[in-house]
Image 1 (tube, one colour):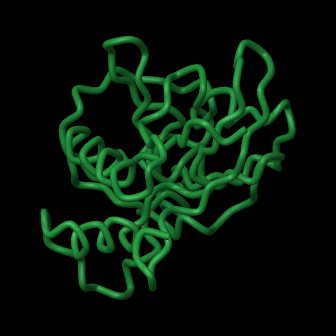
Image 2: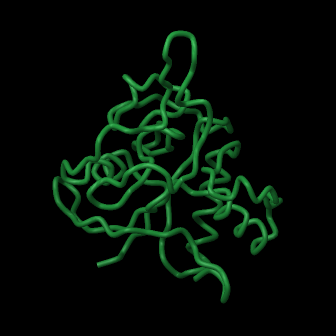
Length: 191
């Protein structure tokens, strides 16, 4: 709880294994406009997005620094450590020990000249979950991860061709704001 009447992001626990020494919690969904707006209201550091129709969309259009500020605020508010995942943590959580649903991602699909999928972001709650409960870890918006001092974006976005959308899709990112990049958070010390 981040307030008597407000919850923080919904997290799922990922067990240790495959080079991951300790279990951790990861956001089930990409951080949503609703999550961000609660932060804005409670912290007073930004303007909440008041368009109710967008509340379940992934939060985009912010910088990596703003996302990290949100994680720091959550940490201070809850006494738990929240942060952007490392590349290894993100990939491990996305792979879910190989338990993957059918490839039904929000990425670009065209039939002839008509774009039938990947026309924009969709609800963070849409799609199928992997074996550990994560949704939209591929497609919808690419997600920031840290690889040492390097920031990359993983998983592809609605702007990428469906054939390229995959857990392994990675591109360098400078942390600036755009409409195709969002994030999810890790919470340490859950075991």
